[in-house]
Length: 201
Image (cartoon, rainbow, N blue to C red; front, side, top):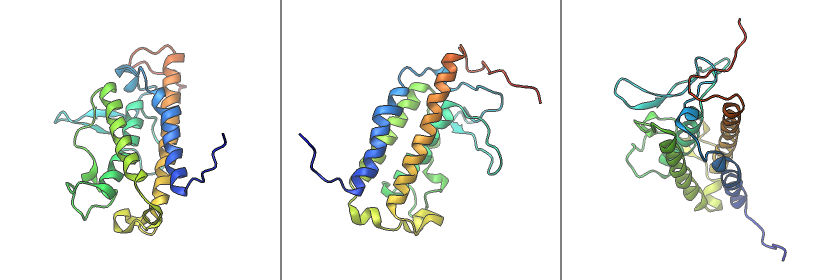
């Protein structure tokens, strides 16, 4: 029987990410090992690593110019924290971060990131479910409302634009995670330090 219901724009925006998550990204994470999670295919990758205090943090990339290659751990935390956690905390937070914080405020970033692949997947799962739950509850008026001061220099953009951006970022970095897993398997890598061959410069 044909589906005669007419979806709202909100349904389409939220359904896009939900379909990508369920059909593409999440299944690609099954069986991820710590060696894959932290695999550096070339020297000098951005990754997630412990600091002097033992807390794991994501390396910062260059603001301009070519970006370093990144690990699966870095990409997963970029999605979990950069896309889901910071936005959920900013616009749907529990009040633990000051109301003066915009969506780029480092106070939204957890002090310690996951130490293993299994912990990373669980953290990503939780952050996705929280974001999906928040945006799924928004009506048309909330989707069209400007982000306001919490949106920083995107303050005039509507919430729907932020959702589109989060969708795009998740699919972009999720595709890179899939490719890194394919390369790890196809090249016979077994350890996080098994670099791909690079040409001399």
